[in-house]
Image (cartoon, rainbow, N blue to C red; front, side, top):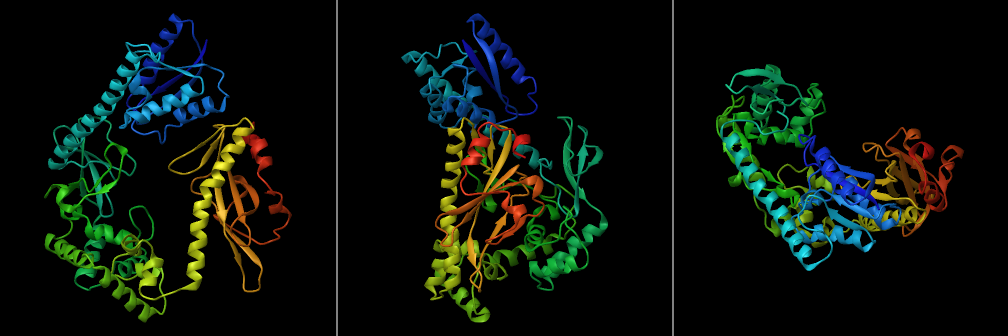
Length: 505
């Protein structure tokens, strides 16, 4: 009998874990006369969610597509399959394999996964225990992190502008300054924050003075810093957001703060209120006077106080009267008001807020409604591509974070829908934004028709030939670009069904 093995380790520190799992799995297979012909391995991947576990997703895809040559999946134990917080989710992925005629065996468990009532009960208990272990471990890790915070030790993250990270040994002596990207190598070492170069400290203090004493807005401060040639700690221009981060972070007065945001068990990201933060005051050397910091906080708090619906709408009317028009960008530029996202959250959308004050930007309506329709159509196009490649014998996995498609585990594909726009002269134009930051091997650019309700044609754009992040298209684009054009995606399906990235490029 032919089999595949699935192994997983949670962190990079468990470098021998997958080898140990494979040893037990091989011994199990030898005792039963099973030959292992394929290995799926997820290295340094949490078992809490399936997102990011490419090997498990690929294995399920292979099984369901019928391309798998094996008939058994061997796993070390129930926890390696996953520590899903919902035991039914773990059962669901196993069920998908069994539905496709695949047997799943847990090699280190004391029960046979034969579908009997006993194995079903034991397996369910094991799954619940695996999830509970993660919950208990999360509580213990959080308690340990809080204890280290209270002792004044830094828990991850860059130092920030004007500060640096210093490495301490077990005796509390400074060993070295950590550069960006460097980490401690010993468990007994600890990290603290120390003041950075004097020039950066002066810039930080000046930012507070401009904000508190001179009454300048964050955006104005950013413009001044950029005009003077100052750069952030990431060597980027200053923005309203990066200035705001400096003006609101307690580390500049020496406080060590933790638990601003929670993402426990990878379930839901929660922004915690200030009274839930874990804080050690005076843990580091301050570079900003505390009274100055508290005054800056008062200004920020007063600006972000809770507005009633009518106050928000009155503010919109005032902006409209001054500016003559409204947009998300115009709202975000108002330093004494919440952002446009706050209006979207309160009223459901900016359009609804506009309607409540009697503002009707006809052009914006069309633009927003078309974009909304394209966002709704995008998953349908992606699903069509996945099904089309599968029909030709290929396999496709979609990364839940980047939304890129991984075809045959060989090359990545980005899918972009381009809205059709008409110029004043009646000519048609399409502006295509390429995901250059994600570096897909191929971008499938879908040009919508004149009414933006169906695809007009498709362009298969290899990244090796695309040097710009934006591509402007007309109705006729010349031979070099038309070489990538196709009326349908059938040719791509046939090619991708058996191609490797070198062949596609």
